[in-house]
Length: 253
Length: 95
Image (cartoon, rainbow over all chains, first blue to last red):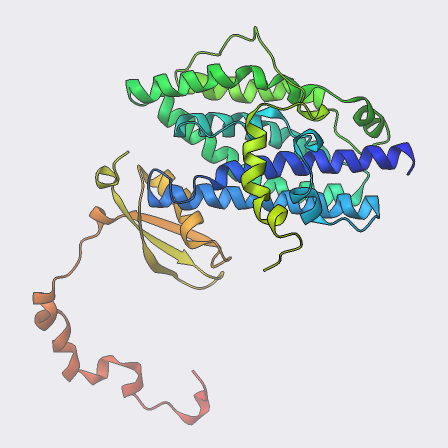
């Protein structure tokens, strides 16, 4: 495989991993939502992310050409082979934490997929065109919830502020380009993520302001997801996600 | 959030352009904007429509069961109020 093809494979896997880990986290809200309507809405969003993961993994399999399919990428790789941003694998916390993370990711996704629609790779551009419609709706929801919670009761305000304080440093790696990704960007395939930060910050800051929340200090940052270095939480996530395929290899339904 | 404190909304969906909005059910939400979002998640999961109306259930004034006699039954003996009561000239063909 030439280096550009390898880079494209890694790119698809990383994007699939972002979607799968967050989709899995959101699916954990199923039947635990604060009320029926929100439960349905959250699991709809979870399904959007899992659907995205399937598209990226299928395409990764196609690019690789070794017969691996979406299930192989999802179920048969260990932590160090996962390339998702750390923010996606963090446990859900309380509802405020889940929606604060969602705002940060949805705002990022809007910028990212808008650019990816311009990719010279038609499959990536098509996945982006589908995803942007979903993300527009996701962002509408997460904005709405952050404002409701932040500008809500004293307790909901405090919980939401705590959530952003805990999450803030995880944003940095969303805007750091990997070396092989830079190569793909120069070839017109990948998005220059470092150029997305200004718009992202403008969107998120505006929502925080409307929600009467403080913008947290940017005095810490944690990353490593794209290099396969994860928090301790990913192992537990994968243990649950992969249990069935690991115990009963090839099982289908 | 306690669901009992959330107001109820009635949801109306238009399945196709040119058709009427039809009542499909109800749901709880904080306000009309949120009700609209939830209606999308609860009632439009399978591309059931192109437009949604939400109406606060408390804004609906409904006739009562006890009104049925005075509201509805007097119409029964006035068949001329139905278009089908009148014979159409043959030339009209289908109407």
